[in-house]
Amino acid sequence: MITKINSISKDVGKDVGKDVGKELLSLIEKNPEITIPALAEILNVTSRTVERQLNRLKKENKIAREGGRKEGKWMLL
Image: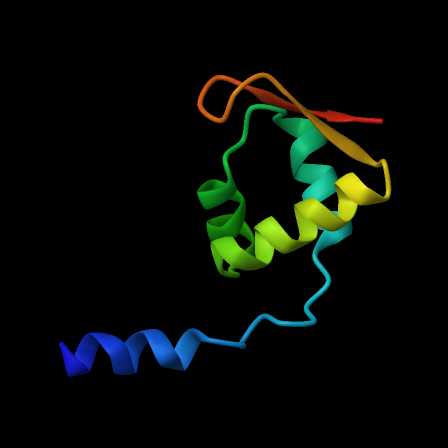
């Protein structure tokens, strides 16, 4: 259990402040149904970083989510 905690703590904060907004917009434009885990893997950041950036883009009215979490899609505004 300690090993797992140590490995998780190494990732904490590694992506904070990293701006991947432009890349997110490009990936969403190419595939509106892309998932947060897929975006995180492509961009080599954590899912939490992607969530933070998506929330920022939503607040800036650049994207919106249509539909549910599993069957929805992203829309560029």
